[in-house]
Figure 1 (cartoon, one colour):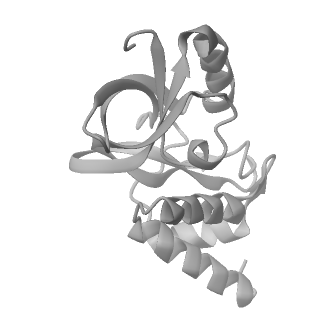
Figure 2: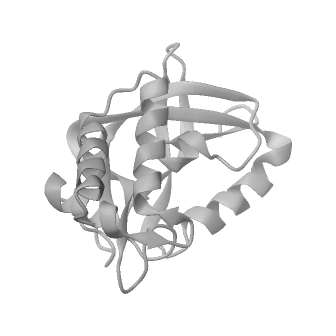
Length: 183
């Protein structure tokens, strides 16, 4: 870690619900990965019988993901890592990695980042956006409806000025499916 500070990169629900204290929050970019609804959710936003979808970072040449990086002071690092591991590693579909990110002000830090394990049974990369929308519109899990996760993430990205055309399209399409009674 960098100079006594734990850095954590958020690209989905960590942006709007980190669940831990931090001393700094900044826009950051992670190269080589993209945000994608490529993980079936059987706990938080779906069930084993009716899986939902959650965001994960999927590796891709030339890709990048804009998100938020949080600085956690050293005296809270152990507690924060324990919390994140309980939250993010619930089914071992995510891998915990320390990856370099570039902050909007040009600083570069190494941040704890949760990425998808493409060999895990919950991995579902490459789903068409329409299929993603239908799944998200109809799933719900222990932390609520899948659509709320999508809408919260898209809204917070928009507030931060971080464009994600796929999430914007999915938000509109899920709304249309629900309005039309398709879910």
